[in-house]
Image (cartoon, rainbow, N blue to C red; front, side, top):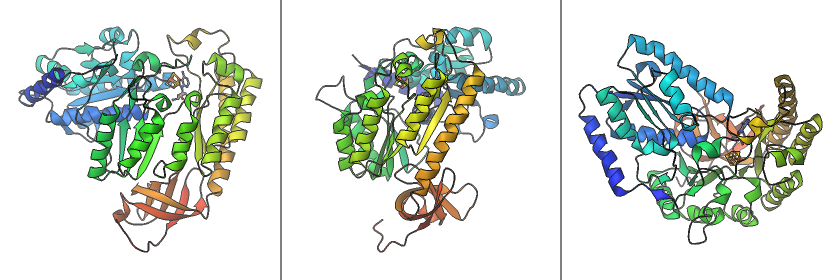
Length: 470
Ligand code: 5AD
Ligand code: SF4
């Protein structure tokens, strides 16, 4: 059973929030450095929400902050090395400014043995906590700031769900909404189930209330988050499925809905039909394949074959012809032969993705694949990923070119990075479109005609709207 954080526990944290505000010499400013996926990005918004409630303000850079918190990722070795490298760099700042408080949280802290490692090898870290006790940030930071003692808190149990915490959202137009935590799938390469715990779905009522509030606040797009959103609601009463949740979310009137991530084994016809029938669900589906080889898929514990995957992709395309598919692919999984890799290339050819995230397999301590024989030499993996990226680039080019001449709805989010007279935003397919516009366009959903395609982005022209209802 999921244990929700009780009213008393929340009240206890609120008492620390108040006490912190009156703590003499307390840190005034914070800076959060975030690594990894959207789930972490959203966790950082929740952490920032708590810090603001404690009376702190955001500092634009690490150098200017009294408290620097690193929200870490451990999915691959390079993510971990980057985080530890940056934390160690702060040690030098602390020599000049001893009052600086250094914190580390997120997935890496939750890894087995990491708490001891932090205590022994990183004495300049003042505060470390795992994903399971994020909601206790007010208490933990209070203790670190008041007594100047080191605080390391990692809870084994990840059963707690915190509702009602403040969130400081990065964007007024786009919002992450967590629908479930954790993962039950234990793909043999993946550390997520060990650091994020078992699947726990949020109550639909809590989710829908959050979305309704976002609609009132003027949010244009939500991204529903979970490691495997397709298995949403399995442990809840009332026959909830992800498809049903999508239909209910659409009824709130939110203009655009996206979601991340889906496991192909749980992609139901009900979900496909719901997407087809719900215009606010955007025409983009991220469906990680990981490999195109049945042998490797089995060794990865993915529970599908390349054929089954293709069947799901085709069902999506049949029901929603203009849908854009994207994927995650791993090369160099232990035992991957040239023939296995060619199966992955063949899958890329058949599916014709809009784009793909490609990764070199990185052994993670404690996962079954890390102790498999036949680990692939780095130079073989490097050569394979190059070939894979090149193969996908051709499809991206083809897919982007096919959009020239079409009219796309763009949620305008910013100026273009290179040119101040150009605006940028994403179309339903999740592809960036740049077009000539003004600051006043930001936050609006505008019709844009695609005129040309770059390598990864599109260029368009704003269409004149006959009557604006906005
Ligand atoms: N090595 C390489 N890639 C990994 N991923 C997850 N674990 C590993 C690993 N050990 C990739 C998968 C997943 C994405 C988020 O990260 O492709 O879908
Ligand atoms: Fe990791 Fe597999 Fe779970 Fe995704 S579904 S988080 S790859 S174990």
